[in-house]
Length: 329
Image (cartoon, rainbow, N blue to C red; front, side, top):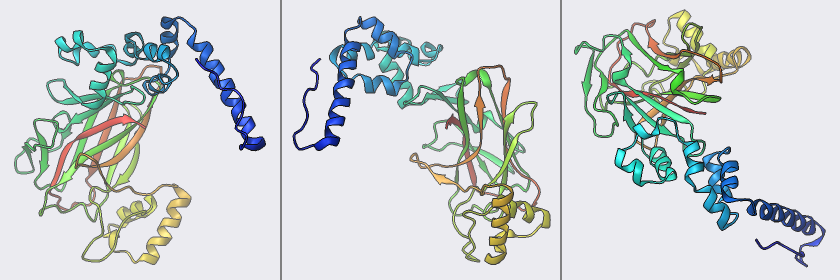
């Protein structure tokens, strides 16, 4: 591989240092380039999919090594052959199989979960469908109904008709997730046009944790925007403000702004966090982060996730739940 020599006459003293660094980098790359291709592949296989794509630009030899099956099979989960069409597994390269699992999710466990890989890291991602969750009163048509929507990846989603006791639980085995990985958990949902109510004035309690241990809890909103009747919004409201509102049993969104600001100061001092609202996704759904956890290299059983509002007693309707998504931070 050609080395860089000399320096730009217009670059000055600083440019000379930069040129020298580039020369050293290219020289080292050239030495790496002289290794046997299988050795280069072995080294690259201990990096990440992103790194493999970047290093492929070094030279033709390194590119060939970086695109080899030896490299990309290391980025694939051990069960990858069961996640693709058998005929495709024989015809596609390992990189092509990886990209197919990164670009499109695959339904597993009788269509109750979806699985895909994060493209940059190769970490495992999952969505637990509403059918895979425990929804209190979910089997009663008076409170919840199961419908089909074309934009969902699952056969059925859960539409909330009318409840005052809102409670959802989900679990996933730690063994299904990537080791040594920080994960975030999101509820993925929509609101039914024209008949959604009950979530604009009350936050929902979310919990995420290991089964058998105390879960980390936080308050979230499932409806965005400002209360059009009063002009009060909730963006940036502190966790302490929400907690006090629950204790006092008051419609806290209508608290005067001055008092709200006092609550925010208290919240920042006591908790250092704010209540989150929903964010729109590129697929047209909305999501709210419920919590985070870390899968270490040791043993753990299951992750348990909860979402509930059972204290206020107001009626709620119009929420469409697609599922709970778990992906790397």
